Image: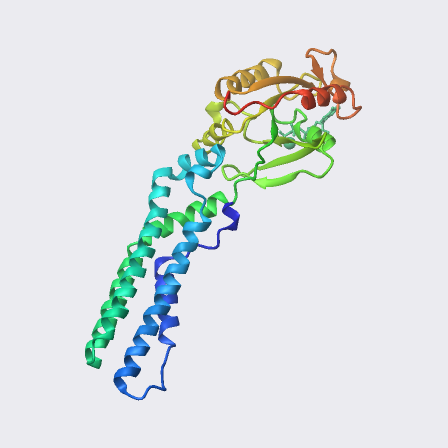
Amino acid sequence: MFNKIPTVPRSQELIDKAFSKASKIEEPYYPTMELRVRKEIQDRISVIESVAVFNLDRLVKTFPSSDRLHPFYRSLLDMMFDLDKYKISLSKMDKTSRKITDLSTQKIRQLKVITDVREMNARMREYYGRVASLIGDLSDDLNFLSQCRDYMRKVPQIEDTKTFIIAGMPNVGKSSFLSKVTNASPKVAPYPFTTQSIFIGYLNHMGNRIQLIDTPGILDRPMEKRNKMETNAILALRHIESTVLFFMDLSRDALYTKEEQDDLLNEIRSTINSRIIKVQTKIDISEKKEEKYAISTETGEGIEELLNYIKGIKRVDRAAA
Ligand SMILES: Nc1nc2c(ncn2[C@@H]2O[C@H](COP(=O)(O)OP(=O)(O)OP(=O)(O)O)[C@@H](O)[C@H]2O)c(=O)[nH]1
Ligand SMILES: [Mg+2]
């Protein structure tokens, strides 16, 4: 959605664009000075109006209205930028666009009854000044919308379909699993909070897409070690209706103890309100099977059972979540 929004102009750019297009207009073929100047000014006003209105209306049309946003994106936008400010900025674009239309219609009408060329020019200057100030007043809002756009474009596109979020400490085998079970190479999207990317892979099951999200750097550390951005990222994940697959490495190669991994599991449990399924990884180099679901991406052991479970699970009802 946000990636369809064209670059947001700065207010001065928009003013320049409209005025410079208007300045190119000349009407050489009118019999009298009065008619010529009037026509020229009227045409300039129309051009300024159409450039300004086109650009402002395009913002209103291309920025998604906050109530149409998926709760995940809405929550991100609110945490990062403030949703009220977003709504207000967009409605200001709309209001200003209409003011410019009214002002232009009114000026063009006024000009019809003016016969003195100097007075026509004075009206035109008035008009220019008024439009510049109306657009100039949007300066902060245009900058704000521009920031929202630039940021939200980087947020990964998450589909509204049955979703599993893969969590677990670093090195437990999350990415290996994702690339093994989802056939196409996963979609890599930069996650704006961290230097990390988020990986999204899809499974097809009886015509339905199942979405698996690998979140390196996001759900792999205790909360206290996080900065505000990362915490926000996690909070936003709560809005994706999903089941969490919590991967635990209990093998001889494990980088973290079982206790450390359990601590993270408990934190995720208290932060995200989703069902959590524990999955033991690297069973090929582990002493024993300790969880119902235990897999090896090396030998393939346990993968089918886990996938059958994933396919069979009912999609969480958003209303109930
Ligand atoms: N023996 C064995 N090794 C595995 C298995 N799965 C993953 N590994 C190895 O474990 C290491 C880490 O695997 P990754 O899939 O990158 O783990 P990750 O959880 O995505 O790690 P981060 O992205 O750093 O959080 C790699 O060297 C893998 O080859 C497994 O089932 N058996
Ligand atoms: Mg990984």
